Image 1 (cartoon, rainbow, N blue to C red):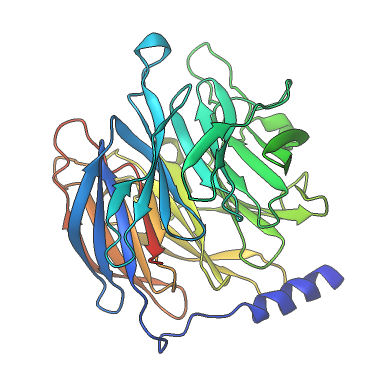
Image 2 (cartoon, rainbow, N blue to C red):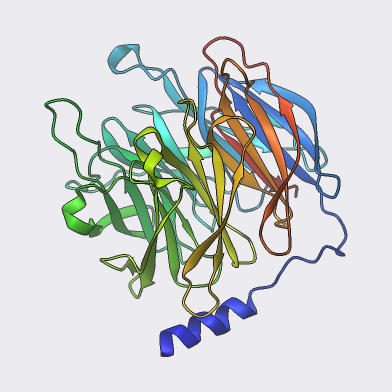
Length: 391
């Protein structure tokens, strides 16, 4: 009862962004292969206008803004292993008026393809996750926002199998590496998945817990997002097409078992042709959004919308909004929580790759506004997108 009361009181205390507040400048950044473009965002009008782009040395993998919003850190890779591999991370300065990007210092070399990166809340460290081999590195961020030396980590860190995301909690004392594992394939057995929890201090990681319900079997977590005020973490299970909720416990760490498990699809019978993708909790903490993606005919490409119970944190699915495209690997919410933009990653025989713009209602539901087809060319995908308030 005390936990439920705390959840309820805290959730009600989360400020809902005012639609009457002075409009803030918002930029959207989106990638197509090695090209990283920026768009002006008209939040009230639900419109995008492309302004310009930069080209990275290889295909963009992920990006994350500095908490000051003055810098954006971008990982890139040619996806090759060994001596054929070319992988790095570049810091960009963000123009305060337009969101335009200009290189800020020299790029740093990475050991493998970075599948995800994040920055701690103090803006002192960039934490980078790699899927093959599964691992993570920590890179210092200088006071001027430039990338500095990597932090040498202690031996024996447990990064599981196929890391797919990494996040630092709001306290800055916990890092969670989301390790997807791999499903069974032919005679090859399943590689179990897990949420690998690390203590984090001074740029150093320390093994803390491995969260793997059922021993990690039939458990392929892909992405995690923290609630903005409550001690909760929301996790997508990729191959199982599930949403799970974990309690953030003292320490901090995560509960060994989920509090709630929910379906993500309109028709769960399609699960074999489906996978989840990104997940984002609304800035006001009342809703959570996740992507369902597929390329097979008749499968579901949607953003699943859940209302969050203000007493328990339990999510209840209220909508599956068609993304008007194929394979929504990534999507972004504007900082005021009034707009959501989906990157439909792939061309199909009937649909172009596109940026689809949705309005977010006061009830959390999505209404389609318009889409912008993207000429991605051959073998290029809309691999990442993000929105940020300009400094």
